[in-house]
Image (tube, rainbow, N blue to C red; front, side, top):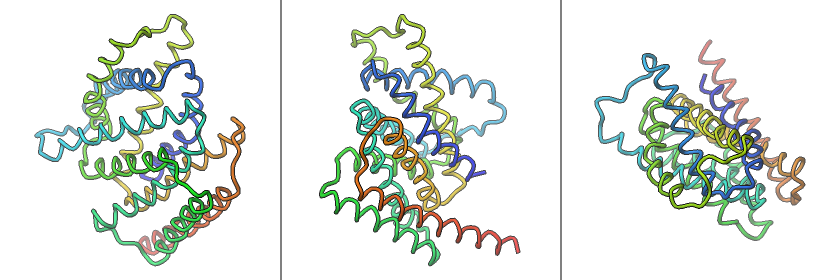
Length: 284
């Protein structure tokens, strides 16, 4: 099920979420962020009440659960950076950031959690790393938003894996931590909390679903998969985002990113083939 959860999360982030937020272009990124935090609380809070008997409670609380404050701040910053990139038409820079992120996840898994790669997996990670380095060297620079998106989400994945709390409970806790800042911003902004036109109100309300569901799936996958596997699967999201930015929104893709795209999919194929062989051997 870990693969299914990860697949659902990454396809949502690569295709559904960017289209949704482009439809909210009339609002500022900060306003959308504040609204999505509050709508996410309502949506996930309702799910927790409905499924409370099936959810693992985090009690008694331990010092480790305090890390949810850290994960809340990391995901809040990541959301804001992503919304600004979408608002300013920099989907390709966001895509590059999420290409770099899996490499950071693999590195954190090795350094912090002591995860070890099989030889074929090491080759796959090496190809992916070389492709990103080649693309950055070819372009001559690394956009700051790309690096920030990669770093914040890689650290977020690490923290959520270490905390090990139920995905819905963890996400609800994170949004509750961010809620005071969201309420303060909405109190001070001149924009109304509930837009008068029903289309905008519906799109803002749906941010609760398109925000919460992929993150819950991601947290569920993080509990079940190694960070290296989770990180390499994440290439699905920026690949979809890259295709969307070019085919739907007319951004121009440079040749170095096409080279990176091909090499990364080669790395994914190697990693998947090795995982398949290891799974067959274990079943045997």
